[in-house]
Image 1 (cartoon, rainbow, N blue to C red):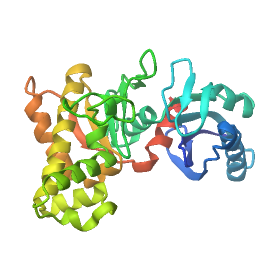
Image 2: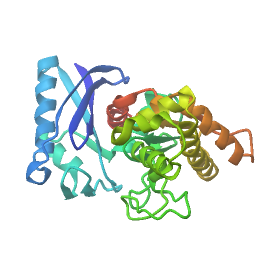
Image 3: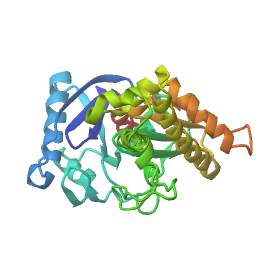
Length: 315
């Protein structure tokens, strides 16, 4: 009888699942919309039903489900306690325990979604084979995950890896979503890049730039694309983004000394254009040694979460 594990990446709008063999081979993946009504009470039952249905359809009872890994938005304490499930309307839950009960006692492990994605990238993605890695995800916000000796580092309060909320800019006046000011997320996220661009356009009204043509529909991708194509203002904005990312990477490396730093998320699709800029500032601020972590791009894309979640139970 074949043994399988399931990786689940729970998001506020969609839930992605992957079925894996013990050796980490992906058998199939699927997804369905997240039902956050009734304080998110349908999320775990929907996941359990989907796993049971897909496992039966795929193996007709001839497979052993050895475990389910769960990546969820929000801090996860080492006990599995989730105080707040961001975008899920969850409050004060033990999702692993509850899902295990719904699945008849199957082993379930839970982790923060960004940490779990970091584990996936370190296992089968841009950092494949690395026991010590950091993932920085540049999306709507800036997330992160830390892997040390092959294990997710959560910290005492589940806050380890909140890289987006490291303070990097003095003099900032607008608050971050976390309530602080000057966070990395305010500059290097997709939202932050657009905000930077709009600030510069408003401040330098006479300066020509292709960015002006987009008006209120301007996106981070537009800024990246124009910067790569030689638009001076767009390139300067991306230079600012890279500066703060490079500083942050250097600080992380001098704090925990990972083998590899993986840059992921939607903004990372800028590819070598952004990565090369980050490396310039990383080199500038990391002079202490040439024996240091490499900075690379993520490779698993939106599948990092299901790979990492599966790794929680596949060992």
